[in-house]
Amino acid sequence: IMSVATSLSRRQFLAGATVAAASGVSAKPVPQAGSDLGKVCGELPPGRYDAHTHVCGSTGEHGTPEPAAELRLFAEGGLKGACVFSEDPNRWYPKDRRPKHDAALAVDNVIKWCSASPTLYPFYWVDPWDPRALEYVDLALSKGIYGFKVISSRGKPCDEKTMPVYRR
Image 1 (cartoon, helix red, strand yellow):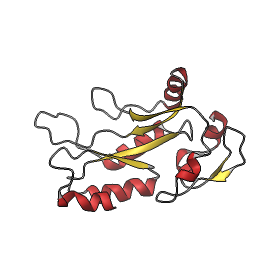
Image 2 (tube, rainbow, N blue to C red; image 1 turned 135 degrees about the vertical axis):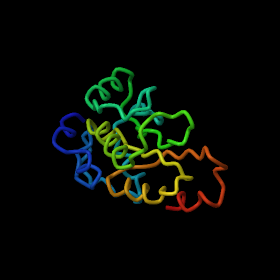
Image 3 (cartoon, rainbow, N blue to C red; image 1 turned 60 degrees about the vertical axis):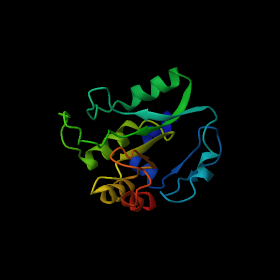
Image 4 (cartoon, one colour; image 1 turned 90 degrees about the horizontal axis):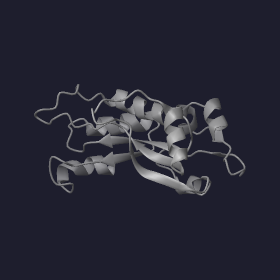
């Protein structure tokens, strides 16, 4: 996995570059977002995968990407890979002193965190109540995000106002 990661950037990998599976299975192109990712899942190295990992610490900052260290920690924990979430987009808490959310920076940051291995999948954390949520979804997809973490903390998740984000 590491040798594959050093020869391709994460964006190249996510853009459909051909990558040889670590299990020795012949190389196959990685599908674009929205295509059948299930076919690729069959090619993943067997093992445990974490489905809920955050890039930022308790300070809520983006965190400086350390992809090799992250991959080493996953390996030490017996994990082959993970879904890694971008920073929390909610900047509306009254006492929140963090800088205003920058979607492009959050997307680029989580992709950098995932750059050490094709088994680390960057996910963008989207707030469906944000007036720019659809724009952020499109931006994330254009940059190579594999999926989304959605937290509807300002209202009911099934509110009609949030449905366009889910549909996108």
